[in-house]
Each structure stands twice: as structure tokens, then as C-alpha cells.
Image (cartoon, rainbow, N blue to C red; front, side):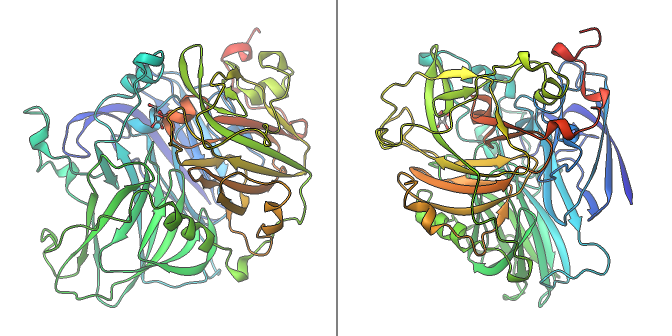
Length: 543
Ligand SMILES: O=C1O[C@H]([C@@H](O)CO)C(O)=C1O
């Protein structure tokens, strides 16, 4: 089955948290429309860029694009940007049931509102390993009142004027938040604007619900809780989980989970849905919504205060959830026992020519003006640096617990060439930022593949000892995984999807500041590239 969508991207005045500001919308909406399909279906999205003065590109996050790497929507990697007034047609197959998302992959546009969800149902006749009466989707986000131009400019200021995006003003549930209007300039905020009426999930006592939850945040790691109700985790990033029960769910930017909710509490009142910041010192009020028991007026707020979530800096609490997330026994596809290559990536914050940047093994990533896929396939490799980036860092001598002794890094647009079909381990090693006694959480997202999460731990990864404790039995497969402060995370994947693929921190500002790398694999196996992805840099006709 083919699902056709016609989208027009425009700026509109919106009030997602009651404060009126410009947002990037799809057909006038932010978040954009949810894409529904069944496994094996084809999605066609005709995207018309009506932004007037801004390019765009849309990434289908979690869809592996097997055989269609040019449809991944990653500007600078898989396509040229879609110019204002131009139309680009995305066409791809959703080959695995699950919960996914889409968002802009151009500049910092994701933060401006260009995002939404993708729900892929199991094919006819197939039964999921859990049951429910109906389902709801919940897209979690964070939201700022200044513009992404303002944010990007601040990030590009030299050292003493550097301005970080800072903590968001609001947390949104399905695009709905609640800023305290008494803090806003008069006339700009309307507490009873219909766009900021809290999300309400109506439940019937005794019934069971599947909640598909995705986080498209630009900065925040979140904790999602439904007051008084436990949640059973059953899916993560499109893979079935050996079910486990949580009081609340930690979810990092770029992750999706499905949980089972039973409407089994006192049905004579409503309950809070709560989204709280974790892993950074919160400066944002709890994002709220309502679990509305059928028959209770949906405007009736609970008599209690919304849950405030776990302690923001309780890293162990969050690690325990990661360790509990394992493949469902009936859907377990264990990884190859050995890998062909191990790439260790030290995550540091650095300075380059006075600018604040993030680096992997002391290299901060830049993108060439000609997308890599076109450069590699069409013999234009000269547009990027050919000396490969480093495979590791000085494990023996580098102290991850203090700011980088040599804070200067280099910039490069070099990429890693992977042997087609090989098995690759990536070890993410966290470290102290430029600020003493500070290390941050980074959610890492791989395009074009799912990876096995082999393990994670505290302190410095030891290549002799830690691999002995990898979970090779039932690791979950994901496309997004958290690297905790001062910790390490090990993942394994098969380089079996011809194309060029980004692997990056899913924090919008960190990616903007160079926190990513790029892989090429099997590009010679691809047929002719579609000309629709071309038209910039060296890929212009006539070049
Ligand atoms: O990239 C970042 O910069 C700031 C801080 O490290 C420097 O101001 C911060 O919290 C980030 O995540």
C-alpha cells in the first residue's frame, strides 16, 4: 500500500505554550501530522518548501532507508537542501513495525517546530507480544521563546560572548505546554488559547492502552510519568522489549518507547501526565497533561500536585532503566559474537579559534557543501578531507575527570569508510566538559541502521576488561542510545546498508557545534543517484 502526503512547510504564528511566536509548521500544524502505515507500506511525502528565506530537509528518524539512502533527508550527507519554493518528493518503505518520528535535518529547524511522529503497525495477521484496547501517541518536546537564528548566532560567538541556548521555557506534550503568562510581556501570552489547552488522554476504567511515546527534544532528557499508574515498557526504537514495569520512563532526545497503561485507579478523578527534565539541572516547569477517566469533566484538574520526577542528577536511576531494556525472547536477534573493527570515540567540549565546539577524539565535524553521498558516488571525493578521522584517543593518559588539558581541537569533514558487511563496534566515551566537575548526557543517533546495545558503565572504558561483560545474549536493538556523564556506552552494528550515514549527538545545538561523525559503506553497490537530491556545491549541473 502506498500512502501519499502533500506537505507545505511555512512559518506561522503559534501558541504551543500560550505564548505567541513564529513556528515552522507542516500544513499549518506543529507538531506535523502523524504518519500512519503498516509494515511494508510505501510512504510518499511531497514537501513544498514555502519558508520564503530558508532551506529545509526532512529526516525519517528510525527508518533505515534500506536501498534508498538518498531519502534519509540529512542535508549535507544524503541530499542538497530543498530551496524555498522548491518541492522534493520523499519516497521510502517502512519495513518494520514500531514507533518512529520525523523532523527537519537542516540547521536547527527541528527546534522551530518541524517535527512529528510515524506509527507503523504490524502487518495483517501478525500479533504483537502484548494486547491493548486502543492506542495513543505522545510526542514530547522542549520549547524556547527565542528564535533558532538567535540560538545559532549565540553558539557561534567567540569564547567570552558565547551564548548557549539554555534551558527551555516549556515542555510540550503533543505540542501543548503551559508558560506562566504573568511572566510574559503583555499581549503576547494568552493562558486560554486553545493551542495550549493541555493534552487529555481519555481512558475507560478497566481498559488497557498502548502509549507510543517519542522524544524530539532539542536539548532535554525527559522523565515521563502518569500519576498513580505504573507503565509496562514493551517496545523501544521499533524493537520489542522483554516487558518490565516502571513508575516513570526516562526518554532521551531521539528515542521512542511504547508502554502499556492500565486504567486501574480510582476512576472518580483525573490524573496528571508529567514530563520533567532529567540529566541537566532543570530550569523548566513540569510539562503537564491529563489522564481523563471517562465521565469525569476533562477540565477538572487533579487535587494533587503534578509528579516532579526522579532527582535530575540520579544517573544510576536512569542507567538501571537502560540495563533493564532487553530484547523480547521471541524477537531476539543476538549480535555477531565478534566485531571486525572497534572505533573508540572520546566526547569532549573544546575550543577552535575561540569558538566553543564538541569533538570526537579531538576532531570537530564540519559538513562539506556537497553532500557526501553525491561526492562519494559521483567521484567528487575531493570536496572533503581524505585523511581518515582517528579510531581512538590516548586511553592510557587521558584523564576523563578533568577539563581537556589541551582544549584546542581541529575541525574536519573527513568520514569513516566501513567495509561493506563488516561488524563494527562503537565505544562512546564521555569526559569532563570545559567546566570543572561537569560532564553532560549525550543521546547518540545512528542513521541507516539499528545497533545492539552491548553495555554501558561508569568511568573509563577498558578495552581489555569491559568487552568481557558485553551482553551478547539479548541486547536490545536501537537507533538511539544515551551516553551518561563520565560514562561509556558500547554498541555494535552491521555495515550492510549501502550509503553514507550520519552518527551524531541528537542534541540540536551539540550537532550544530560539530558533535557527529559520518560513515560510508558499499556506495559502489548503489545504482544511479536520483537527480532530485542534487543541485548544490559540486553537484550543480555543469560542474
Ligand atoms: O554545549 C553546551 O554549552 C553549555 C556549557 O557547557 C557552556 O556554556 C552547555 O551546557 C552545553 O550543553
